[in-house]
Length: 41
Image (cartoon, rainbow, N blue to C red; front, top):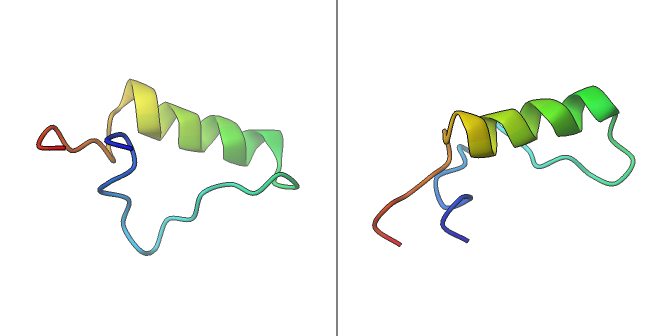
């Protein structure tokens, strides 16, 4: 996925049992802030 190609090693994707805050934070970083986005893909 182009939205996940640049996830740094120190950031983990939330697991199904992760808190809502962890999920929300990851989603904000992924889509709103586009921190893991790679336009070359």
